[in-house]
Image (cartoon, rainbow over the protein chains, first blue to last red):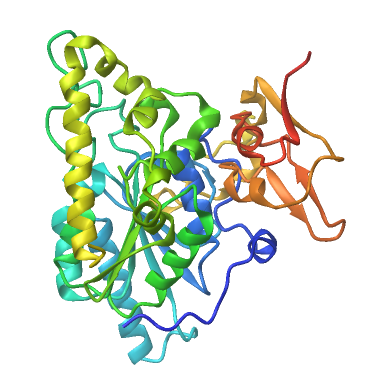
Amino acid sequence: MVATISWKFTAREIAEKPELFTSGHRACAGCGPAIALRQIMKATRGPTIVTNATGCMEVVSTIYPYTAWKVPWIHTAFENAAANASGIEAALKAMKRKRRLKQEKVDVIAFAGDGGTFDIGIQALSGAAERGHDFLYVLYDNEAYMNTGIQRSGGTPHGASTTTSPGGTDIPGKTQMKKPIADIMVAHEIPYVATASIAYWQDLLIKARKGLEAEGPAFLHVFAPCPRGWRYDTSKTIELARLAVETCIFPLWEAIDSEYSLSPQSKIMTLKPERRKDVREYLKMQRRFGHLFKPKFEHVLTDIQKIIDKRWNKLLKKCSMT
Amino acid sequence: MRDEQKGWKDIPIAGVCWKPATEYHTGDWRTFKPVRDQAKCTKCLLCPMICPDTAIKWNKATEDIEFDYNFCKGCGICAHECPVDAIKMVREGA
């Protein structure tokens, strides 16, 4: 069960909180995942151990001999961030039983990118969720393997051009759909699953804290645009993260004990449908979708809209909003 | 620089990082520099929340926002998102 919320995140309070993910990391200018990590580390409630799967954030934050972390931090391979978090949690439990742990409670957070979650890490994640370890798994989703040079992953959306699914004259980018990973995690019947976007920092912080307070595994899917891989101007990171919610391509919701509920940012799209924006507005800003605006690939744009509508209606049904 | 570097015998087991990243200044990557208009700024504290590099800090003592140009990579998110347009991006060295 998720504890009742007895805290509130005000901008002042958060700005005064010490940084656990410091400056001096070597992420690209305008990095979305770096913002996600910063914000989530501001939501911690006490002693925290972080484990990080291989990926952008692992590479940029700890280039030997420098580290941008002010908490105990462990790097693991691509596939086993969740397995590592399980081990840490089990060790903490054993230490507590043997009275060797001074702290009352130590939180465990696992960070992984979309490659390390959708594709490579899902086996370890599924296992950890099944065993019911008490940890928060944060997926920062930049929709491809950005760190190795923009290869498509299970998280890459339909129609996006990457180096392994290039948008050319014949192929309209990635031909497959994005995997609904958060729904897969809800199907594990874990206490807390949520999606969040870096554009709404308060919502993200509250969800991260709820995930930490949940007794058992919690999963947080954070939408984090990547200026290099999505090919847009570095200053548009937050704008894109907001547009993704406003076009319903990435709706915000949470599922407490498998009970879905829409977050206010997405709920407004059902209450005031005129606020919902055209998906073309979101796609046009990114050069990875540039090829879709040729007359030849007009049908892909309609397909994308259809996928979004289908998933959105499905979500509304789950949230009993229809 | 050379004598500061450790040999393989001196490196900690498992290659544990021992230097804080704040010793590595990423500010020299920058082409454009954010400059704040003190008169326009309402201190809404949005920019410290959305800076990827923690280069915008809230100074509790002076109750004001401070830019740390040692780390600012000049991405321009703060200037783009500022609700009152108090931040301008100025070309470095111009």
